[in-house]
Length: 86
Image (cartoon, rainbow, N blue to C red; front, side, top):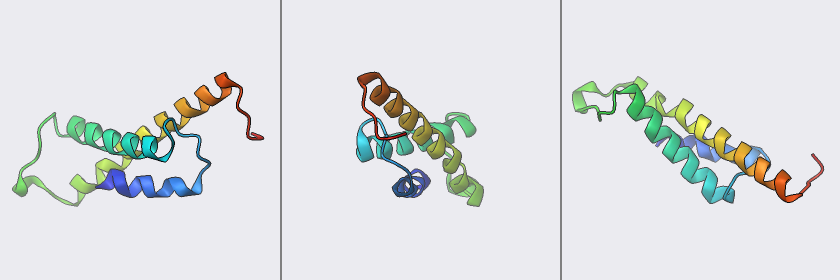
């Protein structure tokens, strides 16, 4: 869910994401899930192990997923010769 929350902030930056807004959504969700699994040792925490930090673990993963998707989209646009005045 934190990946989804981080994804909402993409409205404030130019749309250079690989796959557009849907690609950004998928990258944020995938990044948050993978990062959360890595932090928890590739296991899903039980109800007794969940805290506010469990929710916060998805924020850096979502941001990293968005960054990777953004720079990949920007690279592909530049390779194709697309210029938006940047």
